[in-house]
Length: 169
Length: 392
Image (cartoon, rainbow over all chains, first blue to last red; front, side, top):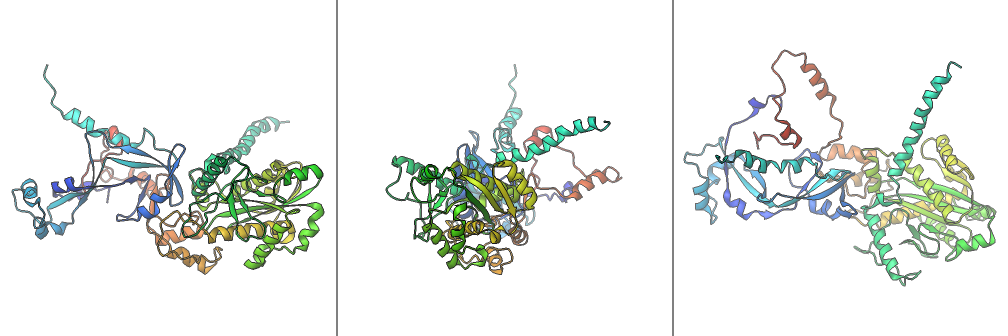
């Protein structure tokens, strides 16, 4: 599936629900050095959080019998982290603007495209939580300054710099 | 003659091979800081702090331990289980006491001194045995007894702990405790989490090596306590011959005997097996779960892999994402096969990648079709794990 990237890409138009960014509750996040082959809720508060220990040099925990060592990563200044969730396709029509919330009008103004919405083409994305820091876990070693995700967090700054207008001399 | 240059070349290689296991074991020295972070280790440190805080040699009361539902947590590492005569439950106890951590020496305070004063030449016999059941911790026990008192130990009718009922074991344990002037014991309790993380580590530390190192540590511990060890009888883990060689090499002045079923052959090993089993039963019964579990079923069964009760318990307590509570050794094959079937898959960065992918790549060089791999993004993005989002 991954090898035929271009064929697999399904074109769609994504609309952001801006109201969700304002209301998003703070979330405690953990980035694990492994991939859990399922997406969905998990009892983190019951199984994971109580097992975290403050070691002499950083945080320690175990997941699936493997030792993890972790540290806090702060989202760079000027940026804000959000947990974004794409709404299901079917939800576009019928549900989209009929939510009886106070920011209905505003959302309509900001997010509603001038064109009519198409069932399989227009999709909505919204934030379910926000964060300004998260715990980064490494397998048996502290991820450290060379961790990929730390590098990734430098991209927004670089992107802004290279896309900024160059002042003429 | 012609062979000698080759021999010379081989020698450093052999030395290297010999050197490697020792390095591994040093990395995982259980009594040291490496076990930090483990729940039980943490608790042990808490006790230590509290006891050191009291200043006195003997604290006025047992250190207060975080309790939940009246359960006592169990210590791990080189911490003793101290059983007061007549008391059927054991209490964790930190260092700095009469017999020191981990050892309930022959009788209370000054026992070591008494031995040295009266019997510098008293010979002692050591027995060693482990309890390797799951779920729960692994308990290693060492029992020692003067050679002159071996008959007394036999008279207690100690036997292989597996052949005794729980009440018989408890009774014998109390009996040994009462006869503390000729029986001493020490335990090393390894938490299941410590075992899982060692065995499933990037550098695998197998159960045999772990057992051997723990055993060695306990014998050394007895020596450090002033026990004059003359003979050591050990129930084997893995092939007895190599194990015996290893121990003999480590303790050249001691007569080492490693045998399968030593717990049925030598009373002192039987006694150690009783200590280990009683301690493990207590630990399992009073287990202090780190996780906030609901509807916990306390009927774990015997812990032997063929016990249907144990398997049923494991199956019932599988959590699809987290697997099991830390009470279970994840490295145990029975636990792993249950996880494979009933929990979600997890891929680690060091998980072996399927051969298919590799052979697919090799084959792709010969295929005439279009390139199967899309153009790679710039190294800047690759190094940071960044990809263009094409789907959500």
